[in-house]
Length: 245
Image 1 (cartoon, rainbow, N blue to C red):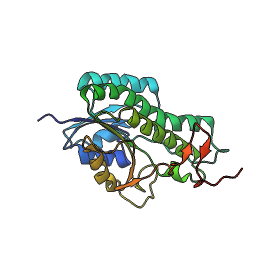
Image 2 (image 1 turned 30 degrees about the vertical axis):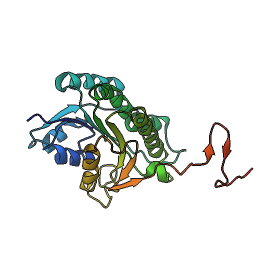
Image 3 (image 1 turned 90 degrees about the vertical axis):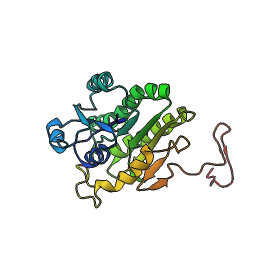
């Protein structure tokens, strides 16, 4: 039996590592990883895992790896953009390079991978994409501007892409895994496996399932306030909004 192909980024630890182990009996998992030797050791007992070393912040290297993957395996119909970076610091403390790296990994890499895979998904009228996000851009905790802003960009990208493909059987959603232990959060209280049921739900969505939504530990969380009554082009809003001028 030929297994469907699933591409996951950032599989050397945390959520990515946990998801490869969880999904490799149902998918041929293609993992993108920076630390290839460590990942090989982690998955040496799994038959349906192919690993490719790349730093997703390097656009040229990422493009070349995608060329190689598509040539060898065809275009995956399933995608989980999981790789992420969290550089803490107040806005005054952050260097420009910190902001650029955060955007490159958390936003631009998922955008470029989606751009490469979506044409084949459209041609076959099937695709399931999960972009791993966080509650950070909704909470905007002090000291995490780079992370929150880059994940907010990912959120906007995901919703927009979902709307661009909403007439097709392509579902593009966001998932926050919850407060799980990883290299970014070694003291978090939960094991990464807590997100497995939500991932299963999103990968197995029916043709009439949700798209452009945010999911967290089995819950659907609103990404934006209820804006009914706001007439953007007319510059007006209803009385349910407090007018200050």
